[in-house]
Image (cartoon, rainbow, N blue to C red; front, side, top):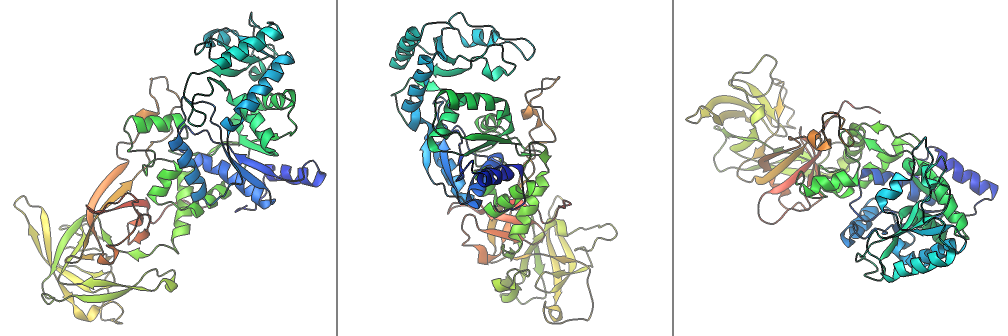
Length: 552
């Protein structure tokens, strides 16, 4: 594993191998293709692939496509891309729909053994008879149909004789079980819906709780690793494997889900954000989807290191989002070239610098990684600085530019503000400054010191850029499905989650490619948007700011 620290799942695997219970490790990552993967799925991917790799086993990628109403090839393709991008290669690529015939035969076996029956009750009626945590369920009036009648009805369900919801196939287990999952769960339902993989071959589809253990057993999965909400379904998982007479006996193991502060971890809610226009797609950089994090500029190494550090337990406490950002900074600090970008430009004319002259200044590409070499920056009479780096009437201890004050331009010279140019409305639109040619950066000048250093971009060669600055999409803690005031998570969407600034970057960045990453001096780490086009300014998404109060 990327992180070799022990965890209870790893301990189970070691014990199984040492005892001879297992002679190999086979895991699987089994997403339903009904949406894009999010950062929570990354933990499952990490665990399944890394544990198998550590013990020289294998991991399958399997799409649990048993609900054609919600699934689509778009999601299948996005999931493949995300798993590969995170750095993992699957052994086998499978679909639950590959096994529909086998599942049907196993359901027939249950019927023949008196362990399944066709029920005519509606979904609401079945729910009303299921009972509660303190009251046992009641048997369906159709529970004691004969084997022959059930076989006939189930075959006719497959043949398409009945409409959606008219009949279901239920496992016959125990309506008085303290575990509600064992109170004759539905294992097949009718759905006259075209399937992305099987077309119109089937109009009955297995329920996840029935299909999943059969899939695991067919593939020889040894350790079926899933999130903690499936713990109550483990007895049903084992029942299906046993009663369907599967040769392989997979073991289900549950772990606590990954939750992150200010982050929605629900496909249903993420889909709602997309469909209702709160974001501009599944890959919006504000989304916690893998594609959104990738577009924002997160690296697979940072995500893997973050997941490894969160550890594995049965609990599902929320992790501070700043922890994930910490690992991004750690990964990028030696990789990302340094550069300068002005987000809110204010023009500066250096009045005593020769007109028409351009000189090229040397600057390290990354001072923390000297092997990356040197870049050259143009300097001339006209430059842009940040509006925030000038104040006409500054408070005390303000060390940047103001009338009469001198600052250092990063990699360049000292400049002094001599005059302030305003428009008719009194807004500052230009500064006139002078420079001291003796103070060139790297010249060894020691004549005097200044307390402020500001960044800049040479104006005549500057490249237009759009900077997108992000804040958390979700504010604070949000109610799961509404609170006493009727508010939902949508009431906690941050209206200021995106700020767009239009400015300039150094000319040596005019040919950047999508996903190129940089550290902009004082502003943070930025990623060139992969959806940049030839027309219009280059778009950069801020990945993270430079500093955080978070500490491991």
